[in-house]
Length: 358
Ligand code: SAH
Image (cartoon, rainbow, N blue to C red):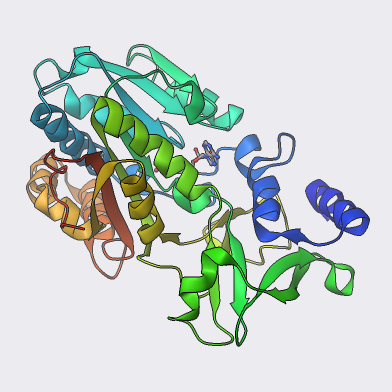
């Protein structure tokens, strides 16, 4: 048993089963044993990889997409260039290089990173050394006011979820208990939930739906700032419009593992539902545009031309790696379709380029 498994089992013995969201929150961010709190999980030697770790092209094009919005909104100066959940800091480094080609933009940008993990904050500082001042925030609350241009890549999928199994007229929550003495799922008593009333129409008994309790508050906090001060947020993640089915997964060393076997030592994620994101943006007074498959988004922004340009300087294994990265980011059978983009921007302003209307 991992040290965190012992802690959680003791808590369940004392206070009863916990929601999956509470389990995920401790597994990911427990100060002493949490997965993100204690390690750098990215890359070939780590547990999983992300679009910016696959190729510099992702961050460059996201940077230029936000740059177009910045220009469309009259190039506000100064402004906040922000990332929530910045991992190794690679995406921000690539964005900063790209926006340096837009006259005035780099000088106007104040870089802010919202990161809960002290270990990853140190990693980001190392990656961004030499890129000018960076201000870190553990949450969005301390972000100063001002026009906000923000990226969130694979951030929302790391937020804790709850799961509910449909019954005839209500739902049983899937909770984490100690069936057979080991951490695992059990079902709570059937209840009706106001937040799930509309899902009784498009689900049938036995099916699972997921909710992400922190998602709407975070999305509304971002959108509220953008509605008030200008800016744009781009969210990239895997998922679909509405939650349906069990998408909770644990990954270790690039392989799916049992999410209850090694708490704190595997990455836990769930698919992101984009409808609640769009609704939170709208409720906060901003416009939502998307959702658009990542492959289509990157192609519209010119990844083909950028890939060709970068290929010209490469031969042999480096060229093959580059072409494989281009395919991995864009091809529908790889990340091109399952990853989607949605944007938030002030009502009445042009949406960031590359996205479909909502
Ligand atoms: N955007 C990066 C990393 C994605 S992994 C990339 O594309 O490579 C998720 C990131 O979100 C990690 O940096 C993790 O520490 C951070 N994170 C997870 N939960 C968080 C929270 N509640 N608040 C702030 N950051 C969080």
